[in-house]
Image 1 (cartoon, one colour):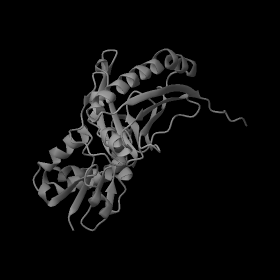
Image 2 (image 1 turned 135 degrees about the vertical axis):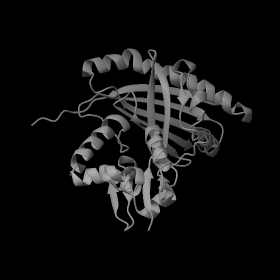
Image 3 (image 1 turned 120 degrees about the vertical axis):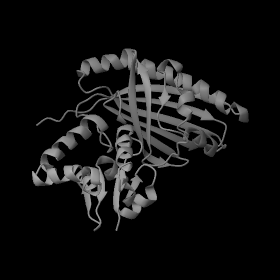
Image 4 (image 1 turned 60 degrees about the horizontal axis):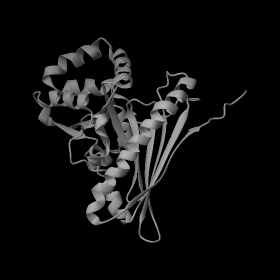
Length: 298
């Protein structure tokens, strides 16, 4: 049985490290599986994509899986250039310390790929926009499931740059990386398509980016007359280090206004994009509200 390494091909840092190992002697004796693309192989191994993205996985010749730091030690033991390092870790019993460092590296740098939850009592806001198209739901969905469309639907002042190489095929678990610019700073944003049911809806969630929480549902409703109603619902929370009163003020005077501008631009752009089919799109409403959580009392 061959050694198997599961890695996140959509993580630039992870991919760079894996390419380094793949150039080492005897790396051809290892099966390298990108868990963001090779879903059939992942299913055959009995490992969920969520778990594979959350922690480094390596299978030994006996079929046993090692994760995290132990996975790296197993990988090192298979490569002549790194066997000495694996030997030192095991001889000096450094694995617990290595695992401690690995966990903190993942939390601080690469982010966990499990769904992020907003911090308790953190203000969570909702923005909703509805747009109606004369075209069928299948046609409209086909437009919006193309992640490349983001570049066309994003205002130029955000300096949107898609990092994930095209073509980007949409599916549940798909990771998409891009950057935007705010206040002169380029911000990295990583999203995961956490729910996908064509042609009814899909959800993108922020894994890494400027918000503490971002959950964007794109829903496509087929009307009786054959037209389509698209409903965008976003739940989001600002950085959790902000005091609640400041978060609410910033949302009211800046974030909400920025979202309105972005979606107003998108509404006009998508009309132009689908105009070749002679369809009309009608903007209906944009809403932004604060969801108040009830505080529990003892």
